[in-house]
Amino acid sequence: MQTDSQMISPSGREGSPNRLALVVVASSAGTVMEWYDFFLYGSLATAISAQFFSGVDPTAAYIFALLAFAAGFAVRPFGALIFGRLGDVHGRKNTFLVTMILMGLSTLVVGILPGYAAIGIAAPAALIAMRLVQGLALGGEYGGAATYVAEHAPAHRRGLYTSAIQATATIGLFLSLGVILSTRLIVGEAAFADWGWRIPFLLSALLMAASLGIRLKLHESPVFLQMVAEGTRSSAPITDSFLRWPNLSIVLRVLFGIVGGQAAVWYAGQFYTLFFLEKMLLVDGPTANLLIAVALAIGMPSFVLFGWLSDRIGRKKVILAGCALAAIGYFPIFHALAGAANPALVAATAASPVTVIADPASCSVQFDPVGKGSFDRPCDLIKAHLAKSGISYTNVAAAPGQPPVVTIGDVHYPAFADTGGDAATRKERKAAWRDGLANILAAHGYPKKADAARIDKPRVVALLVLLILFAGMVYGPIAALLVEMFPPAIRYTSLSLPYHIGNGWIGGFLPATAFAMVAATGDMFFGLWYPVSFAALSVVIGILFVRERASGEPA
Image (cartoon, one colour):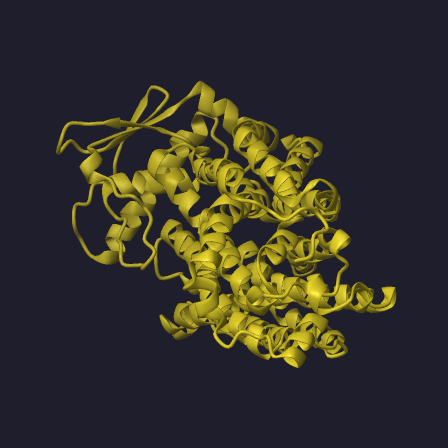
């Protein structure tokens, strides 16, 4: 199968500097818009859980909101198959125009969708449907943009130019956080929780219009046009990509040796940090968003820096170095983050440790992807309250049948005792039980919220920037590496599927899985084993089994 350099001359590929700049800007503008749309949901998970999942317990509602967020990631590989095939058969440009329109419209619908209080169960159902459309669209967008830019860029600078596509994800997240923070400040927290959260979704219509206008000025990829002229397009890119062992073996090695670790490190560095600040360390939403936004602004250039570096020393070296540093550094960095963001919580945990004494058979693992679980047993109520309050605890097994109890320092507090009665009465007793536990925790120094005056903001930002640098190392060079691993005729399809399995499933399910791991074990840091494990696995498999092309070699 022909390579890019055999199909078109270097001068024809590169074109004029102005033309190449338009290609990068137009491709990046569209992906910024799509990532902005996609990240709004993750950044607003708390508000969305209250609006669309208000019919269930608050802790369960938050988990459901995270799972609905993950649903958009779950379908990304299917979008990769659908739109990857279209891109390889019908062209890169037209395909990612379609994905951009789908993303913009589905995001706009979320902004006008009535909540649970207005239309009941239809609200979360419609929300999840829009998330699925977003996921399908994003599954096709990335491969198109990365392929399009790479097929215009000179080989020896492919890492630099495609890193602009990688930076768009962080720019989209940064933009979404900026719009959310500005809206909160303008309308106030009460109005934002009620209706102001819709404004960032509605603004996506303006971004879609602007991005669409820029992308309509683009021409088709020269590599694709050459394949059309010579009749070398694949008529069955899915079959050629995944049912023929030579290419499938590359897909599998790339997935487990590169993309799995990249996805875990990137999502931990930019998403789990936000959840960790808000849910584990109890930092208020506006402050957490501001801290993340500042760190992103400082760390964003690292994506381009590491893309440029990969042109000189190789993509794999940079990516696996980032995975290794994350695997080694996550636990000490997150421990330091806790001390800087909520020192009172860390002090209370050391002075008055919390223990849950319960029969293990009476406790559930609070992770329910299909939404059919009921976490209403006494042990579950204790753990859910502690997890929601950002409080770490130790599990101690009790004798079978023994009622659960929670100890705070030297105080023993029994689990909620269900003595029957109507639903309203039981709800009141549960609320009184939670208030009693909250009062005991407060008396032992456990804060309900992080004290804004005691947050060491420079230190928090420095730690967040370090995590973003790890993300930049793994994410900046990834597009160039993926493009170079696959032949042009099946490139869009071949690179899209492993990328979106990694980033859609491994990365997308990270927040919900890590939160459930914390709720089950009681250790606020236990969820870090999720990204650490994937990062370490990629280092081992990547070193042993992934062979990349030399920097500058034709794709």
